[in-house]
Amino acid sequence: MLNPLHLRTLAVVVRTGSFAEAARELGYTPSAVSQQVSALERAIGIPLFERAAHSVRTADAARFIAERGAELLAALEGLEEEIAAFASGRLGRLRLGTFPTASARVVPHAIASLTRARPEAEILLDESEPDDCLPAVLRGDLDIAVVYAYDLVPRTWPDELTVTALLEETLVVLLPQDHPSAGGERVRLESLRDATWIASRDGTAGSTCLLRLCAAHGFVPRIAYRSNDYDVVQGLVSAGVGVALVPALGHQPGSGPRALRPAGESVRRNVLALHRTANTNPLLAPALTALTEACGAVAGEFLTLAGSG
Image 1 (cartoon, helix red, strand yellow):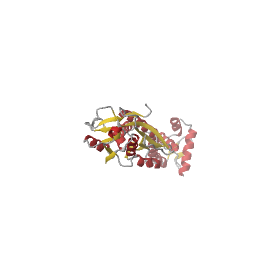
Image 2 (spheres, helix red, strand yellow; image 1 turned 180 degrees about the vertical axis):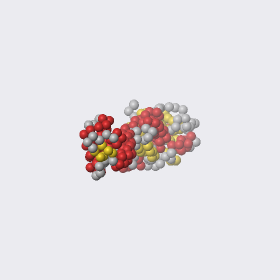
Image 3 (cartoon, one colour; image 1 turned 90 degrees about the vertical axis):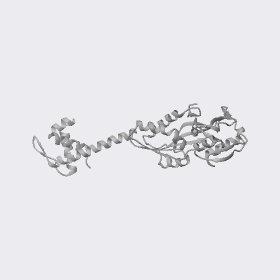
Image 4 (cartoon, helix red, strand yellow; image 1 turned 30 degrees about the horizontal axis):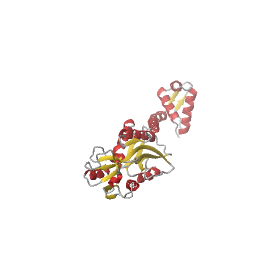
């Protein structure tokens, strides 16, 4: 195995034509330079210099090895720089999984911040629901999963994951602009017991949350339309065909429907970031910071940074 230190010393001896001059340039003693050259000769099995009492003559083999060794040393230095960049998070790959409404309103800010600060890093995005992201994080296919959990549909997470709370979304009732209850600041759910409801797919956390919340107010909602696309939900409400309960990220202010808090205690959906505690990716910490800052950028009337009150 060739020693890079020996190759560097050889290159200086070949260029200066003198062990003594090479020693002065490198900050070694002439004896140390001689020992390094001798070690290289033993490693390759051929002499590199013709030694006389007061001079050395460079062999062709020494010139050849010094020239080719320079290419190797340059490649090694490049690798060392890339390793340092990877260790600092300037280089590398981050695989991020997220759900659709976070993809639309939070994640773009985070990715933009990361790519500005670390233009050489590769950020990969995969969009799916939490139940699909979670196994991918556990397998190591994703570094971070941005997921959600409803207060009324509590979840637990595997012990090998670290959970970072990002954002708290108030659940809001969407009403058509001409609905009798659309003029207030809050709406009593009991007043909507006879309404036609629009909900997410049966069995989803959002649908389960609606059923539990309505049950707490003494009725079962009559669900006629289902969609996991909140743009579709808002369109249906705007068209006057029903009302809906959606998390704040699923409502675009000024998009048509009137958004009101349910009367009584606020009900929330919590946005969280999950990653394997054992994951050593240097991009993890800056990515979590970027996600937190991105949540701050969208915080407002119905969106609150986790832990801020």
